[in-house]
Amino acid sequence: MNEKYPRMNELEQRLTYPFGEALPDPGKTLEVAPGIKWIRMSLPFVLNHINLWLLRDNIDGREGWTAVDCCISHDASRHPWEQVIAGELEGLPILRVLVTHMHPDHVGMAHWLCERFGAPLWMSATDYHVARLASQTTTGFGGEGAASFFASHGLSDPDSLEKIRNRANYYPNLVPDVPRSYHRLMDGYVVHIGGRQWRCISGYGHAPEHIALYSEQGHVLIGGDMMLPRISTNVSVYETEPEADSLRLFLESIDRFSPLPEDTLTLPAHGKPFRGLHERIKQLQDHHRDRLAEVMEACAIKPCSGADILPIMFKRELDLHQTTFAMGESVAHLHALWYQGKLRRTVDAHGVLRFSA
Ligand SMILES: [Zn+2]
Image 1 (cartoon, rainbow, N blue to C red):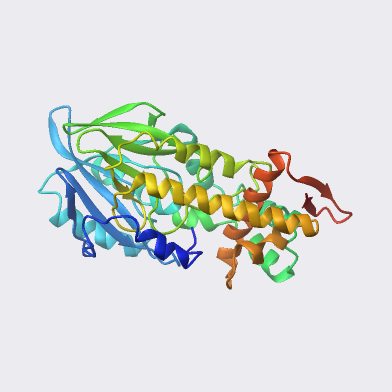
Image 2 (cartoon, rainbow, N blue to C red):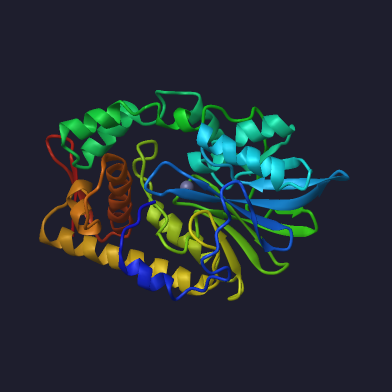
């Protein structure tokens, strides 16, 4: 995810934030609804924090908590977790660890938490298996495959390609292990947590099979990365599925939140809890429609690769990490137009793909 457009700040003012500027202190929680506590942990990235949730639970007659999402695995997240465990659980254990999707900031500490409490991991099958595979290999993701994927979309700077080639251990560094078994979550599945029912809503285009959770009691949505108030969710094409139509999948997925009530309290993985779900869905639809129009315009002037689209979609300096996300987003927008039949794809003698109107 990237903070892309200053105008987002103006847009986010159209949402309401029931807790104002309040944030939970490090290692502390803030109750956002009965039995739902907000934890905020810092991340060593441009995106500098993640929100995690503690839901009061009761499983098989035992009182305790379900933790939703976990932060990346590093010492800096172990310490705040220790503080939360010591001071915020009311002396009760974590009974279940529920993870919205396989990205390192969500699943990284799941292994540690599950092991510590003997708690099961609940997750979608797709994301569980991708996380397990990615955590146990330094060759299956990133590395050479990623470098040639980016090269085929026009990234030609040898220094950047070399760095991408050498980044194959990125995922296992942040997610060194994943529990050996799990409980499968699927779209429409209802999870009983404490006295509440939470309905799983699958979402695509950001992660293989992201699970958001909606509770009719008090109209609460745990949105994960699918519904963020400030930044637009990263929607990328990756080397493992180089012809994915991720943007179409994402836009179809956020449509699925439209039937939820207007007064839904959305608990996002990044940023502040907010109301204004329908306004936010519309903002995201507008955002991608505008980006698609820009991409279409550029491709009408000359055939464009993913790299050619970067300065059009991202009007600021990008570091390498941001460049890889941005390339993935450029390709996602090109693919959406290509699958709609609005762009034609050609490949040149060097294997670079270009799209023209
Ligand atoms: Zn994510």
